[in-house]
Length: 406
Image (tube, rainbow, N blue to C red; front, side, top):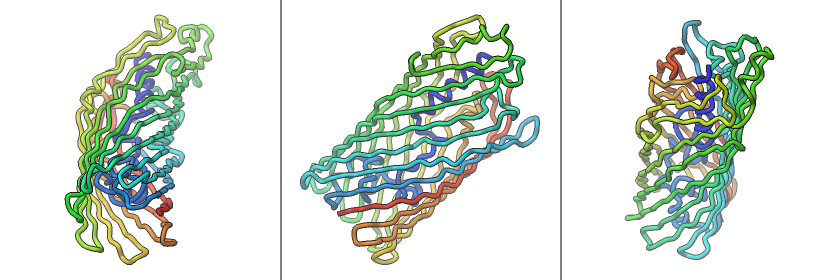
């Protein structure tokens, strides 16, 4: 039982700030999402700072603003000993807001605020995995000040500071005899990271983008992570004291390469490859503020693997007012089937997207996209070896936003 409690804490600490496949849905711009979420070699507007900070200095506009949001409609189906069970997730609403300014011909600055995580996962109170998880709510807000400088007409560089606020709440049942016995895990933290970018324009038609995101060590101390138990039997309750928990998780570095090519006045194509160094994620150690014979510090193995995501997208300019987009990607999962849980039921998955932008005025555009995600059916076993089944993930993500350039 304590191993399962530690497992739940591990997943929540990870979910605060990890950018991986699974329930962490990366939608930070409608234009890029419509093209399969490519962006490393694109410089549409101020939203480029999230994919490649170096692209800001290459923008033609002196001022650029982009704001929008998405609805995340994500479901997971589990097939186990009791048959098929499904999540009943409320709809998440991630959003983004970007603004940039050209200080002079070579220097640009910007600020981005976006929510790469904000989903809610609800398996129900009585499903077969209730001792692993019942429901989780996660909120994360990234604030990214960015600076970009054009070294020459064909090359610009940039850097951004990531200030991340994360908040979570999780509930799970406890096998302590009471029908309503459960534990609530909650917490919040602020951590920091950075991203770097190089944006190349060797010809008028070809863009090349390189970006790097640093490893971030997510640490919760006793004051940031809380464990609250509800135990009906007063004889059992003292074995599970409320208190804090400390944990550390190394989030891996990622490296992104992108190409964009303007075929003619109508067609633009782009492709990205994302490399994530997940092999740094071996295990998690937990230190409970108050220990008892039933509640002791623990280690939870993960042994994840490095992954790649392959993305491709295209844009067609139908006329002066309308741009139409489509894209596709394949996202590898880092998860290990021997240490697999319903909190993050990862799987290799594909994403298919479409979108458009319509110029309402010569400076203001309406941007929209739709992303469909489907994961491979994956069978896995949790670290305790007691819970095995097959998971299947699907999701729809409609989005809408506006962009203002001048």
